[in-house]
Length: 395
Ligand SMILES: *Cc1c(COP(=O)(O)O)cnc(C)c1O
Image (cartoon, rainbow, N blue to C red; front, side, top):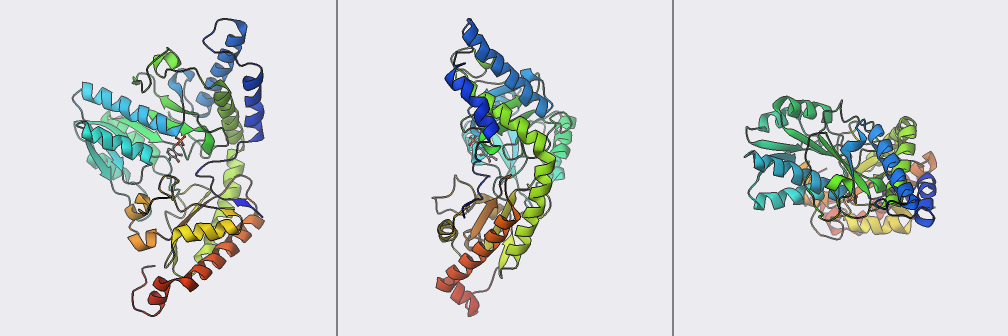
């Protein structure tokens, strides 16, 4: 049995998305900027994709800019708000401690360029408090950026409430919705969102393509200079096949969203209940305000990397957190932010379920994790010391 339980890192392309893409690689390969029919065919497909994507998040097509993915959209959104802020003498940005590195590293750069950044803490539940956002807003705040759903622990933030506060105070609000788009219902108008980032490969589309929604009137700055593609805001010949496939994947995900979410929520809760039976284990993130697909645990006395290797032997593809931090020895900034001590944060496991998850797979996952945790603890001097009472249990 092979179980792919790392859908927060990337997803398998849907057959619908592959089928939608192929004609734009093989036949309709024209450049959308070319005036002859072959080019215009590509241009039409591009604009249809823009309408589809816009419709699904309740935006206008003109408010959608296609990008190379979530990281680029995050960079462009934050850089744009910073430029608007700087022009108005406002150089304060509010975000939180558990953002993706595409946001955090952009903010670090801006700090070096003279911006002041307030990173709000999250509670032990992994949630940002809307009232903390309200309290942090100052006269010179030009942007609030809070992710829709966290990529490691799956927590879904109170986006609509945060958006309402920003709207009331006249501050731009960006959300990195890469984990949410295609999985949760999103309405940029009702949610009071000014800018939103999304990435196709997180909802069964291809890698290397995404989009940035920017509300009418929010002026974007270019990260890439060149031709006049994307209304002059993103130069470079458009990734037509990828964009068409993204729209097809998103349409399919949106049509199945309620059904998929209900199914995954039930499977997720079974998995959480099963893993909670392991001694000295703890769920990370709020048990209910989380993505239907996300399960994240810490196991005391375990090293995350070995856990992943032994699970791989059992055919399970999982993660210890963010793909960006695996391979480094630093524990996850997200787990530290929710108050997990260093030692415990090292023993983390993220299982992110796919739309095709089954009850049989969940049963297999529970047994596989139990087995591997027990095996590793059997070898672990840290675990021996914990059991002998030489060091106290933290979980
Ligand atoms: C995956 C991810 C990104 C990066 O998206 P790419 O398309 O891989 O650049 C950004 N933010 C979050 C929350 C993500 O999960």
